Amino acid sequence: MPSRAPSHPLDSPARPAAAAAGPVRRLLVFCGSRSGAAPCHAALARAVGALLAERRVRLVYGGGALGLMGAIGRSAIGAGGAATGVIPAFLKDWEVAEPLCADLRVVDSLHTRKAAMFAEADAVLALPGGLGTLDELVEILSWRNLRLHERPVWLMGDRDFWIPFLALLRHLVAEGFAAREVLDHVRLLDGLDALAALLPPA
Ligand code: AMP
Image 1: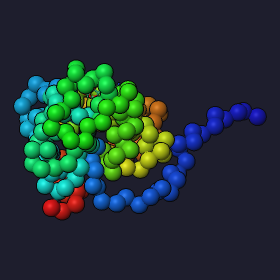
Image 2 (image 1 turned 90 degrees about the horizontal axis):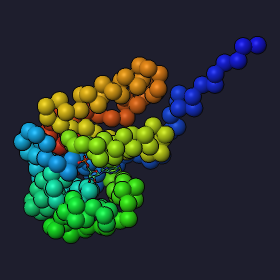
Image 3 (image 1 turned 180 degrees about the vertical axis):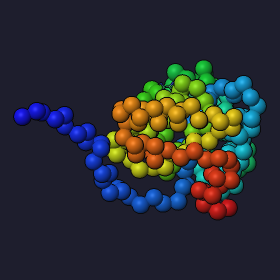
């Protein structure tokens, strides 16, 4: 009898939700430790920081003072918002730990940082960034794909920043290396108003 390759376990229907999604009180934001070439990226980070403060949503982030990380942190804290920064000891000087962040946690590694940030979050937002931002985003999506969590993952960026990333995800699906449902695990927000609509009212 011809043997058939077993189906992939992740092609079976998803398990029921572990917990109902509640209001987003703590948002984990991944973003670049650089500012990027176009000024609109830092402007967006600052706008998101101010929005989080206005909605009393705690910013959970890498705690660095450089680039978009610094922009969002200073904006949120400057507007009276709460922020939790998680930074590995070896990056404290290099990425300049944010002196304004009252809840700055120093951890031993990048792995611990990711797990610690995620443990504090109700939802995840990726703004433009580089390899570190991508690493963090892909890991959270891979945990989602393995059904280790059901927290929302959102993308936002000007200049069509995330379109190539979404095209790559569709490519993985088209080539048979990912289930179609990975495309449902991430949502592109088309601007600040779209994010505002997902947060508790002011
Ligand atoms: P980047 O987007 O490259 O500017 O990095 C954004 C943040 O991700 C910075 O705080 C980096 O320290 C961090 N980062 C860089 N590489 C990694 C990695 N492999 N795993 C987790 N975080 C990282």
